[in-house]
Image 1 (spheres, rainbow, N blue to C red):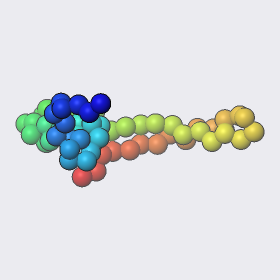
Image 2 (tube, rainbow, N blue to C red):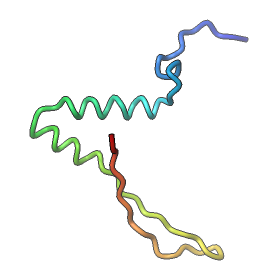
Image 3 (cartoon, one colour):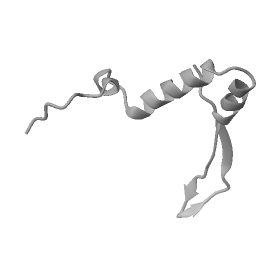
Length: 70
């Protein structure tokens, strides 16, 4: 059964909600005045660890950083 409900514009544009949300967050951060902008941009960084598994046991994890790049 088809629905006649409106399709969200981000879905109609062919993107996921996460992509749409990231674009909006970046735009808001870029519109802030100093010192709030610098503070918000510093929180944008992501840190995570990666562990390889060998024979069912994890090896030493490596810490990585990733930042959003425009």
